[in-house]
Length: 124
Image 1 (tube, helix red, strand yellow):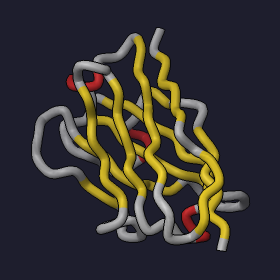
Image 2 (tube, helix red, strand yellow):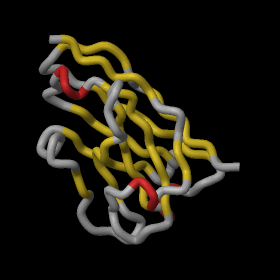
Image 3 (spheres, helix red, strand yellow):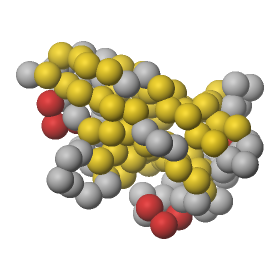
């Protein structure tokens, strides 16, 4: 059974940083494309970042490019999202996801496995 467990969310002031973690079990992160998505109240789920199993550059959503960095630690079977220069509009529930696609896709349907999410709140 695949489980993705996010952690690291919390309350931070604008301009601050957080690092989210996604610990995987039942899934080997180096063999999957791993992504982060977020959903704010009343809004659709939004792509944040992804890194593919096939190598190559990670892919980022326009709203986080240059501020967020996705990475993975294969030894710990964990994926991270480093978030810097946070803004109030980054407030959302952040979920990690795993999929078999060879590309760092922004499409939700490419990901078969999802975590429950962790809340990130950025105050102004």
